[in-house]
Image 1: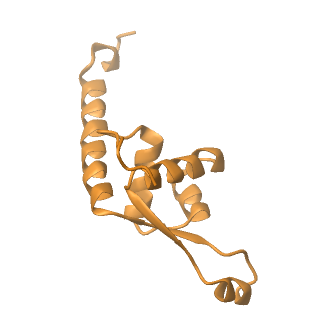
Image 2 (image 1 turned 120 degrees about the vertical axis):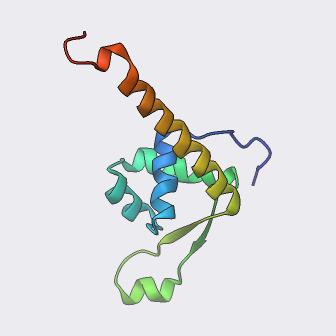
Length: 111
């Protein structure tokens, strides 16, 4: 795992995925359901987050999955670095929303 080039902040999709994990949605389909993002966005984001050291993953037991008649799930857990980058990302997107609300084009009657 390469954890040397961690970004200083995350893109919107990766931030959503990390927020979902923080909210205890811990496997791919659950994350897709709660975020509304497609698998082609969620799984690459999960891989990138893990490579950057923001999440760790582990596979559940094949026996448990077999008992529930489904494939094994890969569960994701946020690391301390993930918690820090999520805070940075949440602040970043909060500031973007504040700026959008302050922009003249967001005022009624403005184009």
